[in-house]
Length: 249
Image 1 (cartoon, rainbow, N blue to C red):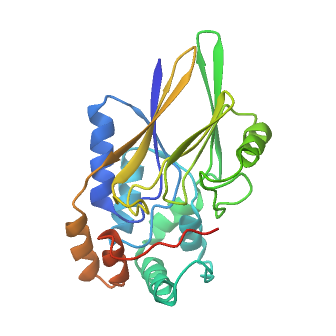
Image 2: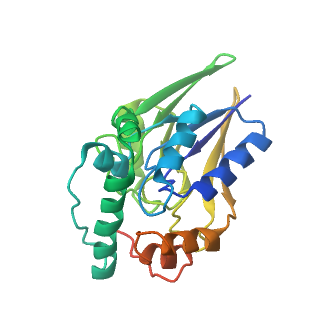
Image 3: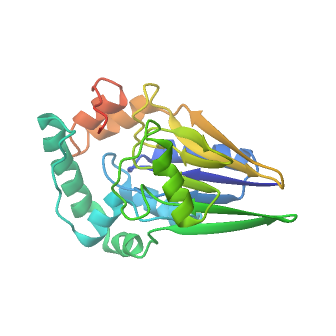
């Protein structure tokens, strides 16, 4: 049996990340992977990057990481309200100004995809890790998608499991004998409970067993730190679940 932990979308929320990493450690899981989006929306972007580097966690390039690493323009999204659009510009600009050049260089070198192959007995399990999609790190895929969408990803990647983040909404979807799984978000969950979410994947010779783990962390402490930072208070209200979320259709 092999167990791995996979998480995504920390978004500068160091307290949430520390809760997740401590839980993984308590469970004795040594293999950890991050699907990207280390930065934006909470005050600890540098500290989160440095924690990932310190623990030598293999991380993918999320769309927010890419924007900060290469100073890409912010494009308004139709799913966002006028309030969120304005807050998003300010928050991302804050990251661009405050993430160190060393940490931007680290982000710039992150891989776009990762393919893993675990051999257990006579069985090879193939895992495809992406931030959001095979061709883009900014594709919104939800549990409500037709099975064919995920079947195509599994077929193209020739994998038994495709693991993704980006939407901040966790799900486990079985497609035949294969899986499409979203780990949810560590630091900026869009689920009603706002808990820090990650995935434990257990592999044995017969099957793959996915478990979504959701943990409480000091949300109010994080919200207060956002409020005393230059990051818009919108993101403090978001964590307190005071902002309605519009899911991209």
